[in-house]
Image (cartoon, rainbow, N blue to C red; front, side):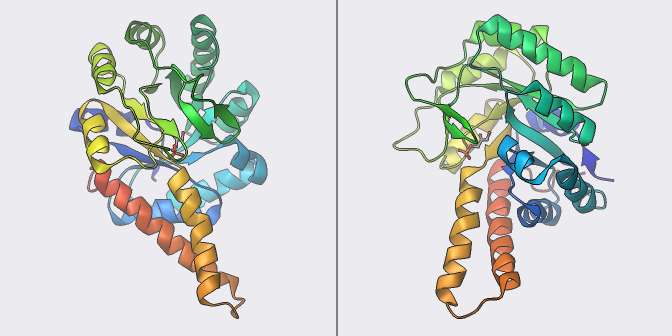
Length: 285
Ligand code: 13P
């Protein structure tokens, strides 16, 4: 049974200086591509669902995919709700069978962020569900959350330390300069800040905005304490580009099963490449 939360996989990853890939899926086909990629590489994996995707398919459908695809694989597979500001949605996910959730109250003042995060931790812990929270504000577009460049701000190390001391989190996402979506120029990552924060808390850290970062950046962030790396935009592009590419190459063929198969292969390959970058291949036991 490979249904798991993120707790153990992230503790091992931080200690072993590798990261678990957290991949946002869109449907059953992309869910299967992620689980199969991890299985083939014997890697622990996190399947992330954005709130929009939850609303599109419904809680029960997504949980049934999760159980069907993950119960019989050898590697641990966590199903994580990505950036969620709505406590009701978080509660519904916990009740439906998600094993992990992210409360994103990062746009609120510090005390309010702590209060909402604490509320989610209380709800989640009794259900054996792991929790991620964010401090500072990560820029860019993720699902329906848009943070303009001028509003993005980095996590303060002293506040990060207090946040992680006061609340029992399984994963902490400090804003360190990465952004969601496609980078317009060179990302300005504050590695010193990451190092300082990692030195002040043993909680496994999440690196958001993984699309477009180089393997050197991944390596450096992972060596400094990032144990979870999020990839979403890259898979959205692969999802659409592969569909278009297949149809352009076979303009007279109207066989959706072949298109879905091409899309699955492309997604699986890109997930595998990322898992190799993150060093989690072979760490599935
Ligand atoms: P990207 O869309 O930039 O890959 O970021 C994903 C992410 O951090 C999801 O929370």
